Image 1: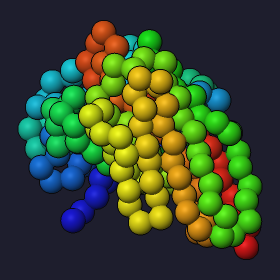
Image 2: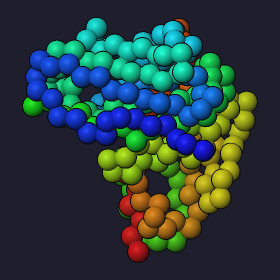
Image 3: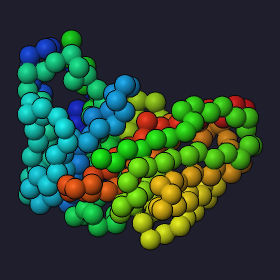
Image 4: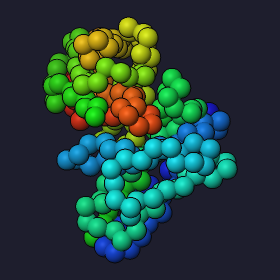
Length: 115
Length: 114
């Protein structure tokens, strides 16, 4: 079966710009979560969506936002980019809704570099 | 607030050795625990999922155990191979006063030498 697809794989943006990342979950998986991974902080939870509703949000500024569509695809947006936003952004899907005991599957990530 | 710690941070072993990776968590009120591997620059690959009611799970050469009361999990890798070289991440699924999310440890970087 098809895995979790994240696009684009790589992005280079300038400080102050905004960026939109996309995640297509495995068919039938309706919960999508986003994580930021940096060498210093490791993997940090951004937010989780189920049935187009944001159910949980991590400790990130309001510049980080997301949404989920009726087909379960999700996008996250980062506005007014800062150098510190450079990271690997990973999305994960579960059949859900959490905390149903389901396995999380991750995409390959989007590597964002802010210059 | 759930905190997850993984020890050791890095481990180098010769091929064929059996090894144990450790994961500890501070809040025992968890729903599940999942082990992942991550190759450099790649996403996470799920290895094993242990439900809170389970004590262990096995897949091939991998065996993961869970002791919820003591806040510990171990990942046992038998007969290690160079292809096992990767970062291994432990993630705990819990609520902690809000909705469910996965909290990750910083990982163990495993190098298996031929």
